[in-house]
Image 1 (tube, rainbow, N blue to C red):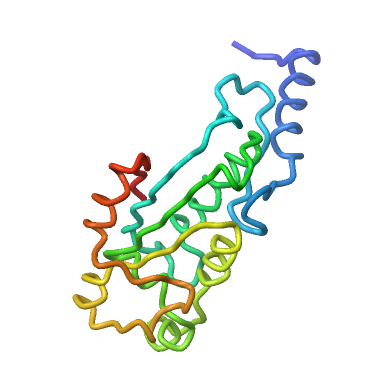
Image 2: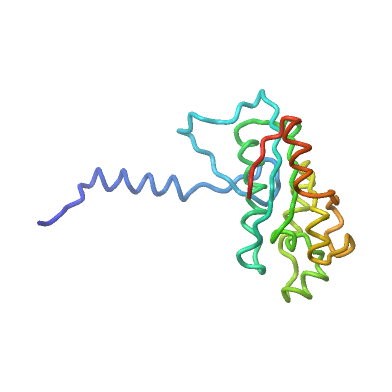
Length: 180
């Protein structure tokens, strides 16, 4: 049996493919990272009149230490998705607590270079997140477990007593918990 694609159907599929691939990523809140796309048919979108309080529990390490961690970039994506839907940056309260295997994404360039033989590609993302208003914290317990000092890390990070107590502090204050 031979299948023939009708010209009208072919044009329809090509136009869908063109629409999907012709978009340029947008960066409404976190500049240069976490590129996202407008979805014109989306009927479920964030409400720009609400305040969003989000706590990201970042414990997953990078897949490839020579590339930006997709989990770090996903924080930027999440913030940009809210911005694209019209949520102003001042109504988006984002806190990130980094622990476990993800802690190495916070190493300063010197220490990252010693460990992975490359510059830390995540630092520019963390800088952009901070510039966009995200509060980046590192678990002090994870630092001790990995024999790290504050001086070993990106200077824009705040040291938290622990990831666990950071979560138990902010969730009761109305922060939604996202696990990356």
